[in-house]
Image (cartoon, each protein chain N blue to C red):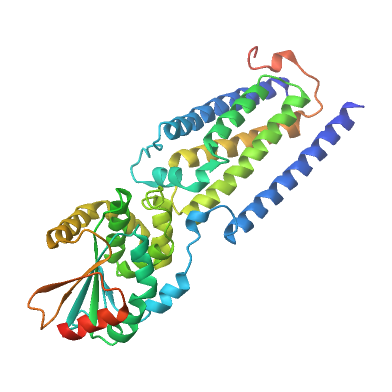
Amino acid sequence: MSRLSEGTLQRAIAFLAALGIGVAAYIAIADANSGSPVCLGGGSGCETVARSSWSHLAGVNIAVFGVIGYALLLATAFFADDLARFAGFALALAGFGYSVFLTYVELFKIEATCQWCLASAVLMTVLFALCAARLIVFAGVPEAPEASPRRA
Amino acid sequence: MSQTDRRSRLLRLAAGAAFLALAAVLVLIVITAAGSGDGGDTNIEDKAAVAKLLDGIPQRQMTLGDPKAPVELIEFGDLQCPVCAAYSKEVLPEIMETQVRKGAVKVDFRNLTIIGPESAGAGAAALAAGEQGRGWSFVDLFYRNQGDENSGYADNDAFLRAIAKAAGVPNLSKWDAERAEMTPKVEETTQEATNLGFDGTPSFAIKGAQTGGIKLLGFPESAGELEAAIEEAR
């Protein structure tokens, strides 16, 4: 596979991570304003999930951790070395695993689904697939400046 | 280290991390499913005790007992009220066993919200459960899982949903959709109680052949007092 292909992967990762930051930031801001995200399709699922005890970890809305995670993933997309590849994979793996757990909680404990949380889970799943592909295909390949999304 | 060695080492590390992550997610799910996680709002107590207490007694809207029972006992209560909870646990079960179960009395729960604004949301949720024949199960379970007054739990969606689920409400989506519509009914019975002169919970009234309409009982302090009032009303 060519180095340009890693650049394509990096751009896709950057784009999806930026989208993830937007989604997580919206949830976090809605919570900070003492409200809850508005489900675009109607219903009270977003409010139910936002008001549940699962929405916070140690008093902090989990969307805040989401913003941090997506931002770090975005940062890994700007480098084309093994550290960035592995860090991206590890971050996406942790995010994907936690998303799976939260989706389980929504479906079977809270019994309500929030489309913003599901959107984040889908983004994290695709990011995990892209970061895993990037690591598997390009691990050990020396850094190539032209692979950076800033220069591709 | 050669490029191949480095690649091989990284991929082994990634595989190990993936395995650990998978194990961590599975452990989290198993712990959560067992109810030992931090989901206190969904950990409803006394579900079996309430199911046993009400087993076999008809429930229709907020009325417990045979709809044709000759005497109707009306409880005006606030779901956040700790005295109501104690009464529901210590006094009413005897009435249920000696009077309601045999069809001599039916008991009607009506909201009298005096503790705070959260009581209205809780009361509306109970009425929506009543629409599906689980009103008393909801009320009894709510009482047995009460939190501190006006601490934010009473109209919390996750808590109410957990109560509704534990009460056996068959269609939770319908319950969820209908409870907002029930708030006017909560206000209506609160006004009714105020008009009757009640300003504390629980307050009781009774209707029967001998009462000539509704008779106010106030706060009978024991099952014996309630039984005497039922006897007089019959």
